[in-house]
Length: 145
Length: 467
Image 1 (cartoon, rainbow over the protein chains, first blue to last red):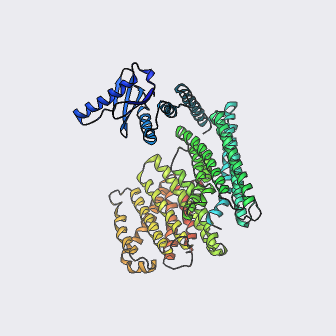
Image 2 (image 1 turned 30 degrees about the horizontal axis):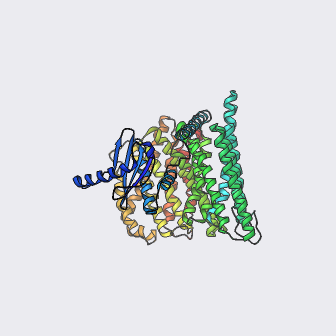
Image 3 (image 1 turned 90 degrees about the vertical axis):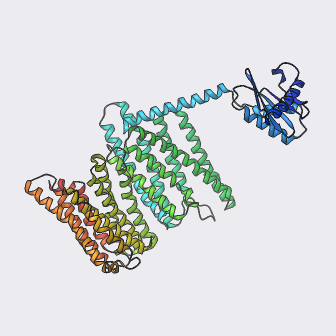
């Protein structure tokens, strides 16, 4: 998760983290999301919940009257789950949220104990070991039975 | 003592015998080769067999402690410490299994992991005993022991999985039997006995007895492919053992007549279940429908005999058991009639015995719960033709034998054996069935003679004896 933005009903960005991954002013995002949701609601009756641009995507969810916008890599498989976790956290915390809290939330949610490479190594190690064991077992079975 | 407690005696003995057959098999096979690599391949099997012997000894000692009501591992003022010794013996068994499994898989890390699991299980029991010594009763201690059982089950599951994979690959009954024995031992871990109802424990005890029996049969005939035949051989051992164990719990063990009849009856079950398994094996090879009929017929005899005896010694409802036996035994005989008609080449008339039999048995069963004698007399006009049907195979097989003898054909003892066996069965079983014996009908024991002749003839042993 690259960024979290909390936007109130008036379109103000209440708290944010990770804006450095984008360019411009974070305050503009609040106005844009709020205006976009208003427009989409007017023409379709629904709200938009995902925006994708280049290598990034924005997930937009509602936490009470506020919008929770999270920024992810376009192929992040856990994006939806992370977005939901942030929404849950914001609902629980109410108004006591600032940039520092969002940074903490991000760390809590996306904290990886192991990098993807390491995970891959463990997986292939286990697979290799199982294959070796299976081959030995079958060879032994053929010799003995 | 409960049936499953007595079963430990037989489980211990059967496990040691099974280990003996594994060692014997490994010894013969490795002696037959000069290849040192192939010789070395049998080492895991030896180690596995040692593990089984350890468990067998543990089971025997457990039987002994339950018998004398004095646990081996004693804690002052705590009485219920049975099975604690078996726990340690099981861990000993598992140690050998893990070593054997690691040698087979050649992956040391699995072995190290399993040994750590074993060590934890060992410490759990050790700590549990210390807690019990301090507090007498403790749910924490019980949790420790239960968790230890779970760890044992994990290792047994690993070994079971190992042999199942090998069985799937080699299609050999030997590895299938080893896998099955490990799976049923998972079920028979004493920890489960505290939470399961008695009926289920009894069923588990029978299954766990089947394990070593299947290993023994499989390693005595190691060239067998995976087959349900092996399950039949396992049952041929487990069910009679269960009947004998039941004599202890019901108190009939002091009645020498009942014991003699029950043991002879148990032998009869072994013979019929063995014959059924043999016929199944033959049917798998030939796919001949008369052989399948023979198999069903022997299985039916076996079931009738088992339920009949269990009912008579108060393990089941006697009334239902006797009627079940009547249906199963008569059905088996009618199938024999169908079998003989088919074997004589009359395909179209082969279903005739069944058509005559079905209404007769339905009306007879409808007389339940009156005694069998009342039922037979009430429906005598239906029963008599059925009785005549029972003699069809006797006559046909006898005529076949005479014809074969005249022609000097080989294998002629088979029809003669079938004819004599069935005649002996009918003459012993049905007249005595009409008399009410308390508690056990002696014909259950006497018919083992008939089944012995049938077994000799079905498996072709009679011809070999004649030669």
